Image (cartoon, rainbow, N blue to C red; front, side, top):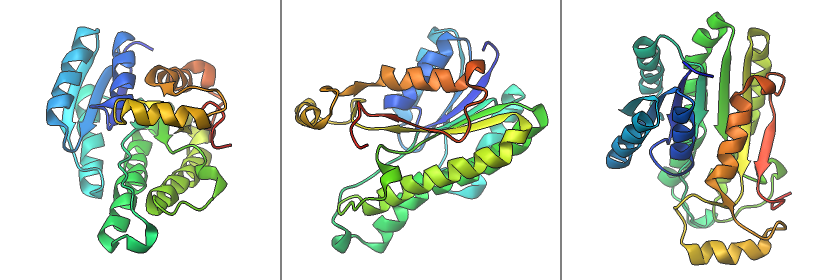
Length: 244
């Protein structure tokens, strides 16, 4: 997979950063998109170069359709192509639905669902022309079950929408050699949650432990590989059997 080019939203920290560094070790060129994590993005860019990849750290609010389109075009102009689009960004907040504000409600869709549409639409023409492409979208474990989620309602609905959008893009782009799949993590120790909280959650997970970013990276590596060329429109849960 040498000489491939990837764009990773939310790539400055956590799972996105781990994916970026793994691709760098395989000599990919990796563009890391961030919205506020400027210092972390710069550090990730440096780490990519140290591992043998080429790096771009690009600030972009991908909830803006024009900015999202320009981001994809910038990567294509810089490196001549875009082989993989990995949508890792997915902020959330906890608030009871009856106390949610219109602004908070809209923010969850603006930053979790809409960018996948904007970026996927922008990346599709180049991938179709080259007859090759990989798009990976991040949802969440149990988003396919349509269950009540009183404290993360908008986030949950957005992540369910990610699955529908993933399958639709897969059907549209499959004739052109492009795969579009979703990854749905459960509890992953990505550095964003207190260890004590994660330890408590482990009791609810059938596997008995919290997942690591390496567990997620391994699935991404597979979906980007030629071995996964016939995997299209899938939703792969990484949850230790939690949420099924």
